[in-house]
Every structure is written in structure tokens, then in C-alpha cells.
Length: 182
Image 1 (cartoon, helix red, strand yellow):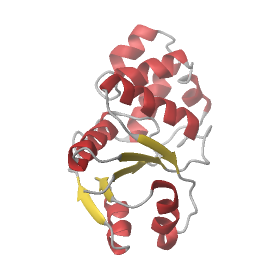
Image 2: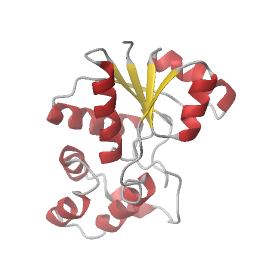
Image 3: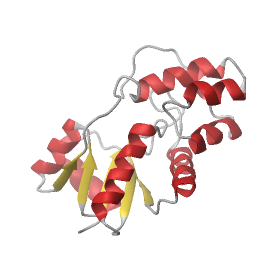
């Protein structure tokens, strides 16, 4: 079995992402799991409040807490879907894509990739924009215990602690809001 790749923006890393990584670990059967952070050039904006380095720290903190061995790479956007897979492959290598995202699945399958589809779960709770809106609301509360309690259903404890310790929630309160992309 070749390496398994999980691709996402991870803004922030939440339980939906954790489920994908666990599915990749199971599917890889001991082979390498690569988490590829997309939109690596983005940060400090409404849909992408955290930098690639910050998202990597969230993911690595979670992986350490879970005892999950993985490699994290960063992939900058090129805004060119027909050439995306070739571009991203330079960063994450070849293998099996593990995803629940239909458009990404279609791109990789069209490029001849093996794709392992994972069913979405708790989509109403685990959409990135919903999690960011919750973080935005909590950024005005300034109560760490309240943040832990409110984020607990959607964000792993290690990521919540990273957000608190890095004082990274405030960033979401600095942007105009609306419904943003996943």
C-alpha cells in the first residue's frame, strides 16, 4: 500500500480533519501518511486566519497527543484546477488520496489517482466556516475555560490549547464576517 495523503486548508484543524487522518492511518496499514496543507501562502484573512506554519503546529500538536505518526507538507495555491494535482504532487508525493471532498476527489481521479473516499460526518458542526465563526465569537469572551467547553465538540483538545496558548483566536475577531468558504 503506498502512502496516503490527506489534503485540506485546516482553518483550523477540527474533528472532521482528525477523522480523515485516522482513516488515512488505517488505510495506509503502517505506510506513510502525509498531511498536505493547502493554501499555504494564505494567512491573516477571513477565510484563512492562520498561516501554514500555525496550521502545521496545530496538526503536529494533535498528532503528538494522539500518537499518530505523519508528515506535514505545505502546498501553495496556483488557482489552476487542471494543473493542481501535478502541482500538489510535487509537495505531497504520490499515493492514495484520502478525502471526503467531492471536487478534490474528481480532480485526483481525473489525474489517474487512487482515491479513498471517507463519508462526511457531522457536517453541520464540522464545516470550517462554522468552526471559525465559533472561534470568532469566543475571541471576544476572553475566557479560556469557556473556549475549551464551547470548542470541545468540534476541535481536538490539543488544537484548542494551541489556539489559547498562541493567543490565536483573536485573529478571527479582526475580520468582517459573512458566510465564508469551508
